[in-house]
Amino acid sequence: MSAAPFVELRNISKYFAKVIANQDVSMQIRKGEVLALLGENGAGKSTIMKVLYGLYRAEEGQILVDGAEQVINSPKDAMKLGIAMIQQHFALVQAHTVTENIILGLVQGKYDIKQYDKIVADLAARYGFDIDPTAVIGDLPVGVQQKVEILKALYQNAQLLIMDEPTAVLTPQESDVLMNFVQQTTRAGKTVVFITHKLREVMEVADRIVVMRNGKVVGDLRKDETNEIELSKLMVGREIHDRTYVEDAVFDSQPIGLELRNVSIRDPREKIFRIKNISFQVHKGEILGIAGVSGNGQSELCDAISGYRSLTQGAILLNGTDITARNVRKRIEMGIAYVPADRHRYGLIMPMKLTENMFLRSSFGRIWVKHGLIDRRRLDAYTAEKILAYDVKATGPDAVAQSLSGGNQQKVILAREVDLGSAVIIFDQPTRGLDLGAIEHIHRTILAEKTKGKAIVLVSTELSEIFSLSDRIAVIYRGEILGIFRNHDLDTQQIGLLMAGYTTERR
Image (cartoon, rainbow, N blue to C red; front, side):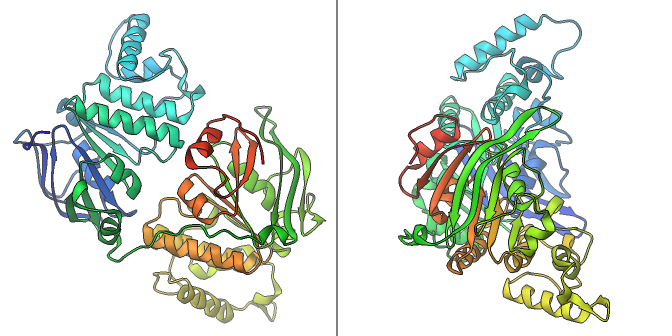
């Protein structure tokens, strides 16, 4: 590994209106190293790398490449300097083939696509990627799509590869393949910047770690000179304790709170089943974790339970009562709550006040009515109480939802749904995109509701979250449950195989 920096950022500051995204950020990126850029959501990690890649322009500071100052106004400028970035949300054309995506914008005039298919096939083989150059992107799983993004960067002969949360949509096995690729790439003299908030990944793959908090660099350490406890304290400013699952020996002796019997939902437009023949039971006081790669029917399953989608076949029972024909309002009245994965689209109305958002899902309740009008005073007091109880960083009940951070928005949804969910609470990706402090608060809330005897369904693509909270784990793949297991019956690798569609004996 070279001691001389390939890229140097000096005193970079980036502002969005009055928000400071990066403040006086300086760091060096050396040839042949894996630099982990670690920090909570909103710490400024992606922003500083988007400045380097030319997606954002910094208000202050300098960028040096091989010792020479550079002005990077666009990704095209960055690519000329050997810098490529794989963003968290892939930039692939779904209707085009692998080869067409890789050469897009790089080839002009007439060309022989078969010749480029061979070039892409040779490049994929060189890095151990099993990819068909003629395959259409839309037909490929997300793990393979990510490899296509990597091949795009390699085709452009990138010397510095920036990866933004690269394992967010991968199975454990696909993550292992990615880690091997990262190490293989740096052995060949290239450089990788690995943006992540996952401490385990950092300790596995990094040579050096830069920690960011509140838009500033708060640590620059070698991996062999630090540990996960020190890194977590740098990230959040205080110590975070890992939560490990404590086996609950009595949950399965409790009554059944929620039951699904052969539930299927067929998409009438595409004429395919989104979920198929799903059956399971959730006891009162039990957390059933649903593990799987995003897009395998999790959202449809949550919608089925909460009443947002009608069933093609099957039945749903709440405390032994068939609620299949009940609408969303009736299910809310019966005690079913839903924390959706997309808090901006389905959880909150962003331009509305917190009071109004707290009122949304129970607006039909007589509790909020006084003399035929909304009892604003009572509603404001209730919202203020929840702001305090859930430690929501807001100016008060009149604060607009979009003025809050993602973690505080999620706390507002939690406060509302926990009160509504007297019998069942569905948590769909409850900690996605949140920082460690917010994650810890939400995990405590979920466990507290379990102790109150509620039946809880927890959907998460984070296996660490599934393993730390769930009593049993159901693995979903292409809309079907491949197995339901008690926590600790299977390890991460075995669950990961199921997530990729490899079946094993059910228990």
